[in-house]
Image (cartoon, rainbow, N blue to C red; front, top):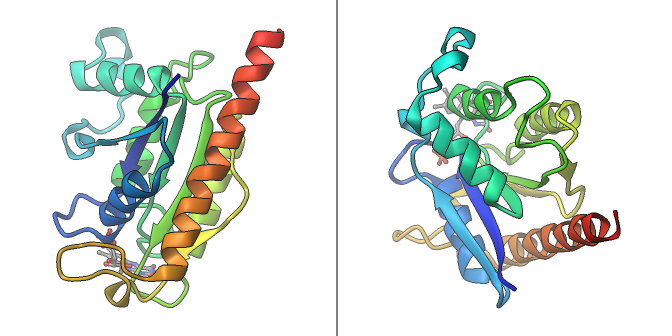
Length: 189
Ligand code: FNR
């Protein structure tokens, strides 16, 4: 059976290193694991609880795609020591209505690339707190913090840094382990 992972980049930039990191994950994924990159982050409206009665179609689609995925893989940039607003906005939409969050119990792995040497460590800490509150099944290790991002990719956006490639492959493998555990627990329940 194919394992389906929805990948979300927190950057809207065409030449985003975080989206490139997701493309690398897609290439490095083992057989039987399908990684699909979500591309509509920039079209989501700002979260507004008044819209919950008549949820915009692209929000319905986002919730459905997360619900149908076996796991979620996020690549986040770091904006001013934290998570970009567009990414947080999508997670806020996915987390509601209260009690019906599609992220509850969902296997999630996070990684990130940034221009500084710290490779999104501060943004990832904030993101971990969000998923902790949402009761998602967050992968702990490996931590994938790709610093000095301009050195890690070639001009076509391919991840060429061997250490980073190994870490990305390791993170996908760790996410698959969590997905397997969650699926086994469901069968046993
Ligand atoms: C940044 N950048 C940045 N980098 C970092 O390491 N720590 C930070 O706090 C910030 N803050 C920040 C704020 C804003 C508004 C921007 C636009 C950028 C730089 C950032 O790491 C760099 O632009 C990355 O390349 C962004 O990721 P993508 O777009 O390549 O995926």
